Image (cartoon, rainbow, N blue to C red):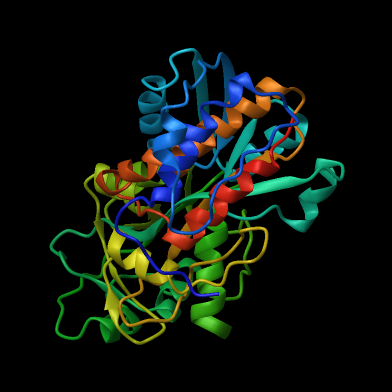
Amino acid sequence: MQLRYRQQVTAAGVSVVALALTLGACSSSSSSSTPSGGSSSSSSSSSGGSANLSGTLNGSGSTFQLTFQQEAISSFKSVQSGVTVNYGGGGSGKGRTDLASGTVNFAGSDSPIPAAEKAGFKGKTVLYFPVIIGPITMAYNLSGVSKLQLSAPVIAGIFGGKIKTWNDPAIKADNPGASLPSTPIVLAVRSDSSGTTANFSKFLVKGAGSAWTLGSSSTIKWPANSHAGSGNAGVAQIVKSTPGAIGYVDYATAKASGLSYASVKNEAGSYIAPSDTAASAAASQATVATDLTFAAVWAPGATSYPITYQSWDLVYAQQPSANDAALLKAYLGYLLGPGQQLLGGLGYAPLPSSLDQKAVAQLSQITG
């Protein structure tokens, strides 16, 4: 299906928050009935005497989500003061491992559970709740170069270790007329199991074709001279402190770190700078599976940024208690409702409205 991007949070997204916050007074067998269309019952829900919830939720995983989670947790506290939400980064792989082992209530992950990890979940039903989308930048540190354009085959050559200096003819071909130095290229990559790595390498598989030979995974065997950092912040720090460096860093972190980043050639042949608008254009073209998984990399469209990725919060459908289910519904409902309004100021993009509505409707599948 094709998604239509929306500039503001939908009424359905808002109504689920009011509905979710009443769940503390309900038993685990009760289910919320949230409309998936454009109509909303938010006014009647919000005036229905919502109960104060109490308890703690723990999450870990995606560092792409980290800034958003920190902001959303602070805002959610003003709505439910009795609920404590903790979120640690560590990368998507750590989040999935923590969820499988039962040490967290939800996991932030920028990619679906890989086949090799599924056995760890012991057959339990895992629900995917998309919460944010955004670009992965080609962040670089190159004195005197304020504008840079890169195509997928050239990026593949750089990260595959075949293009070693900034004045390589392949980079010059992407940047006609530019003065590029002979500075050696230093690769900045992730040291942890990362959804950013999975989506970046997926872009290279789709966009670079035979020019990319290292495959797609949450971990990649990078060239031996690569510099590895933990989380998006770790890669950003390497780029910032290392002349000649280039690394894949999420847009929010790259902006916060003051990094320069390249425009990347998309499927339509246009060089597009990373932005929340360009990410939304890409996500609007994504085909979404019934479990709400999708990939926004290498999306069609003249204005689509080609290294756009998505992030989910993963939870078990069956929770150990009614209170755990109520807490998760309330917090996830907040992320899908008012939380979406926080994204633009943080360097992320909101979900397309039809996807947000599907995620809202899926909240009823969380039971105690």
